Image (cartoon, rainbow, N blue to C red; front, side, top):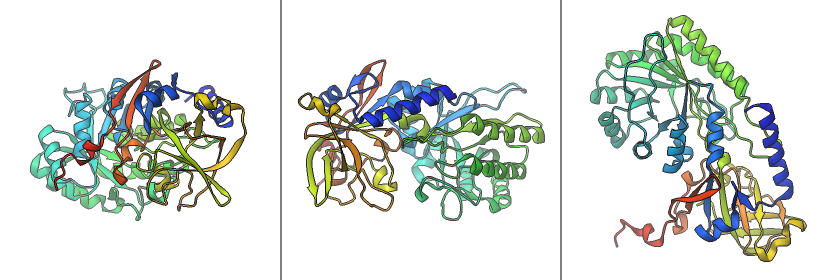
Length: 444
């Protein structure tokens, strides 16, 4: 993102928080969305997704980690922006195919061009039986996070080329639960085991063509410089069969006022320098990939929920809404902070001019942890919001990554609807579940 657009974004975020009122999402009335599609509701701003895809055009390949937001309409939009996709399950493979992705690359590149790109890559630490069947049947490239995957793939698809996901021995993340490197992480092949793993790959008749390292979400440039150095060392161990390196994902997104986007130019320069060193060493072109999830969709997403009760528990006031951690799990999982704003109803239109108050925001679930304003560890905190009344709408912002994707049917709550807003028009891209949907497939 260039400095001027970043400044504008930060001014917009600060102003919106100061006002505490949101009446529109991407040019569409919040109240109209709630009345037409019901609450709780997920709404996505299509243009924001396109903008974030454009931010990363310096990279040879941008590969969306679809576990962040896997709605078919979102995947199709991202595919239209030229972004490839990562799949971590047979279900995500199916989603990618349904959204129009081809299972494998075709054609042979010219000698002086970049190696071909795989539209879908299956990334995991294991093959369950269904995913191995799908990879073998469809010819999908695999990013292997354990050595056992190599023999299992070779038995089904002899002569395959693979990518290795390597754990460099250290990690970093905005929460310990998002740290994907070091001894505390199950992810990737331990860096000291690479010589033995390369022997196993050779014995199995597999070619290692790609190398992937990812240490966690929210890593900064100093940690990423360590990753780049570690990747370079492992790449040299692998040798000239290598034609692709992946910087992984984890690009931070500003949730709180005062936070800013990652230094994208610095991030790319760091990895491009690493790529150039490897090209000089190997004497051939290397494709440079990045694998964002959160970065592409987080800011596009909003949860619209209705205020259903307001009460005080001693000195603390609670705003209770019809969305819970079954709708948005990040606060209860990580103590994550999301911007919140109020959309007053017509009867309460004066809220924009009224006072603010400190409130804790909670949901409807029969669970003490069903609080949107909590710190990591479950400590309840409050948020300053305009005074609300029952029937107003609360908008939880920057909810487009790991929002609906982590939603559940806990307390037998139906999953919410999803809408995509493009060019000022909203369209339903997932129908709200019904009680009948909840028990479909069950028997007494």
